[in-house]
Structure formats: C-alpha cells, structure tokens
Image (cartoon, rainbow, N blue to C red):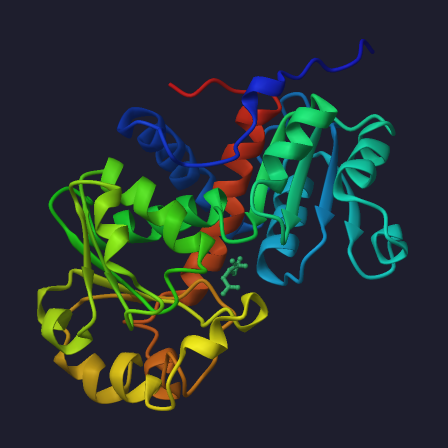
Length: 314
Ligand code: NCD
C-alpha cells in the first residue's frame, strides 16, 4: 500500500478566521457522525489505518479519551503519550518529543500542552497535520466546535443569540475558541466574571463581544450560559475573592431566573459548589455537559476526517 499522503496545511490550530461556511460544514458533518457515536456503529471506513499520535502533556480526561474514541471509530490507530511517565519528565522539550513521535511515521498529531502556541510549534517542526487539543491559555478549537454543535442543536441556530461565558475568561482557551466560533456563526458573546478574570479589553476583540462584571444584570438576556472553571494551574486563584460563588456561580437560585429552556454548558472538569451547584449539574434537561461530551467524539471524528485528507468540507 502506498504511504498515505497528508497535508500539513490541514492543521487545526485555532478557530480564529474560520468562516461561517467552514464552521457550518464541520458542524453538519459532526451532526451526521453523532448517530454513529450514539448507536455504537462504525462508519463505512474510507482510508482507514492511519497512525495518529496523541501527545497529552497536560492533564486531560475528556479530550484525550474522546480523541482516542474518535480515532478508533474511524478505523485508525492512536499512539498515546502522556506527560507522566514520558521523557518530558526528564526535561525533554515539546519540540523534541513531538519530532520523535512524528519520526515513528504518524500521519497526524494531536497536541495538548501548557505552552500557549505549542500546537503551532509542533506543526511547524514536524510538518505533519496537527490538531490543537488545548495549548495553554491560547485555544481549544475542538472544544469550541463541540460547544457550537451542542448550542446549535439546542437553540436551532446561533444567529442573533446571546451566549454568556462565565468565569475565568482571562486564562481560558475554551473561552477564546468559543468567542471566535460563536461570533462567526452570528451570536453575541457576553464574557462575564470579576474584572481580574474578565478584563474590559476582551470587548475590543470584535463587534459581537461584550464584557460584564455583573452576572445578575445579564442573566435574563441569556439564550445559553457556559460556565468555566477557575484555572488554578494557571495561577488564577490569586485573582479570586472568597465570595466568587455568590457573585459568579450558577447557583440553583440563578438557574431558576434563566428563561425557560435556556441551556447551561460546562467543558468540565466541574468544581461543584464553586461555578456550578450540584442540583444545576443534575438537571439533565438544562445542563448539557454529557451531551457536550458525546458530541465531542463526533466533532473530533469530523476534524480527523478533514485533517487526514479523507474528506473535503463541502
Ligand atoms: C478544558 C481545558 O482543558 O481547557 N477542559 C476540557 O478540555 N474538557 C477546560 C478546563 O480544564 O477547565
């Protein structure tokens, strides 16, 4: 069999600059692959058998397992490396680690790293199509896509909708990827948090981005609310006061003020009793966290198909 040809330009490093047409094509493909994920079936295997290196050099539960599941479902082979137990612990750099895994004959790489810009660095050094699975504070494009997919399914369309993203915006790669995707799809994004974690400067990021430091003032205008975790591993704890939950948590009383049918999302991991109360998390009609996870596998399959050159986006 001739070696599979992949195109390094088919990396997914950011959602910034992706137009509504491209995003919609990815979301449509995600929607059709969702049935495959839910039924446990495997799609007809076009071009199966690629080797996909999964470099997870920062902690991960959902994203890593979701990529593994997506790779398997498409009939490809994951080669997994995590930070713990790898030579990163011996001081090996991200570039050297990635170059060595790439030299084993990978057709694509998936990278999670604490280094903002690390996924682009891997793509540059290896010349292999690379998917950013979260790089520091920078971006988390596949999370942005699965969130957009969940929101589109719940709201019908994102055009003209107001989506609140609440919490540690400053340190969140999830917020950044969502800002790009949701505004490109016609939504207004309201970034909500204390001034230390949601600075006004974010509002300069685009015409449909707003900032608020008062969750109660914007709650009733929301078509959907995405709650975020405080990124303690990025030193965000120092900027948080002891009344954080009272001011910015999705408490039961706040959830009851949301309009009927307004969904609550969270990328996980949830810190229960901080950004999200237990009974809000347990309200499966409103809180879509597990639906996000299921859609995550389908979204990653859609991305892998494109990256591995087995499918065009149209
Ligand atoms: C997010 C991440 O890693 O950026 N989680 C995820 O990928 N499901 C958000 C977070 O860790 O708070």
